[in-house]
Amino acid sequence: MAEIELKNLRKSYGALDVIKGVDLKIRKGEFMVFVGPSGCGKSTLLRLISGLEEITDGDLEFDHIRVNDHIPSKRGIAMVFQSYALYPHMTVFENMAFGMKLAKSSKEDMHARVTTAAEMLQIDHLLDRKPKALSGGQRQRVAIGRAIVRDPQVFLFDEPLSNLDAALRVQTRLEIAKLHHDMDGVTMIYVTHDQVEAMTLADRICVLRDGLVEQVGTPEELYDAPDSVFVAGFIGSPKMNLLTDGLAAAHNCSTYGIRPEHIEICKPSDGLWNGNVVHAENLGSDHYLFVDIGASDPLIVRRSGKQTTPIGTALGLHPQPGHAHRFDALDRAIR
Image (cartoon, rainbow, N blue to C red; front, side, top):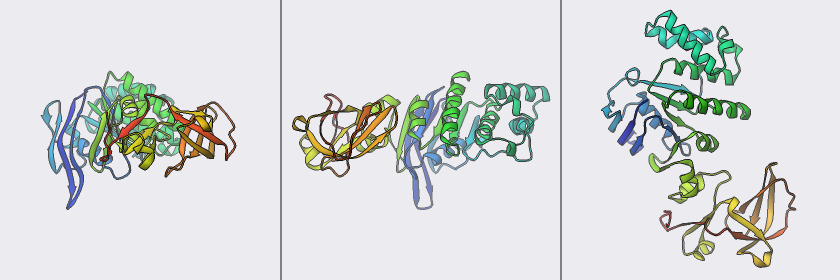
């Protein structure tokens, strides 16, 4: 495992600045997740760490050693892509052992390490098959296994689950979490646009916006104490309710935030806000109401369990004390 530090890291393509000065320290053995909207620079940042993209300016250090000019094979990293990148003419065993073969490892060492990785990922019964005979989830596990046998200091994952269906994403996500636990604290950096992946896998999350770091913290810190309106609206599904104009001014702020689970339903005459239900979603374990209170978007209210609320129902709503978030005119949190 390795400690990784980014010091004022920048990446430009001609006049286009993509990474605009990122400072970030990733601890040894940490599972760090990069999240952000499309085009924010998260995959580019991962490629700078891997050596697949050249750094324009700034320093990248592995264990306090500057590696800007080190080729990927000298950085002690292994990368897993969303496209699997398997050789179709090779068996699973040959795909997993390919890097070791190039390094001229012994047959005994290749067999031992490939077998161990395959057993860890529960694909040991597939070693003689070729990729075309595998499901998407199995192919992704082969790609992960190929990274494991290299025994890297750092694992880099670039949206590895985006090509899988919902059930396989859950299964493979659990396998990646178990992998991190079983591999004696190897450092992992993971890029995703999926909040569930970020919130369930990460030790810490780095939220990126327009080539800059917006906030870094544990999943709980980002969810409970967002530093900005951007983070408040990005972290959480469904997102935090963000009220502006007069609804926010009543609370002495420019934007007032409250999460769906922190809103109580009461009689219309007793509510801080009043409105009518315009949409309802039953998800089995949860029930979401979308209530028009005169804001730019309906207020989302979460209720536990399966319930039935007719469209048009008049409700009073009240935020739970201690759970509101206030932001100033610059969209920064008021503490």
